[in-house]
Image (tube, rainbow, N blue to C red; front, side, top):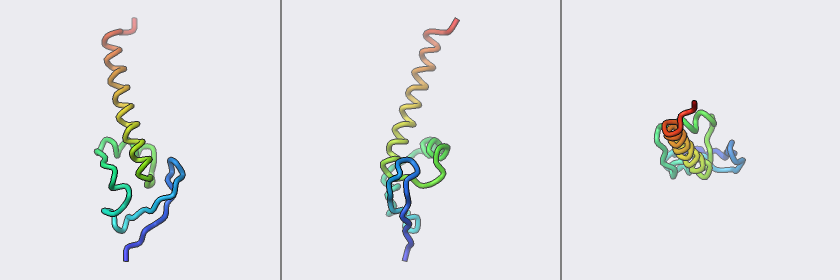
Length: 81
């Protein structure tokens, strides 16, 4: 029988069941992440997170990319003198 582990999310502190022994059934598989999103999350957290926090971090990644693009555009339009 596969072993499941109760974990505490390092971001929100919520408790969730990690099903690393049955990864296709784990709650984290409900959040589809690109490699860039995974890298962004891994740079901040070394352990598993709950699905809600994974979704929040995915959104934060895209918000940061959007902000970076806006900043880059603004520096082209309004260069500092």
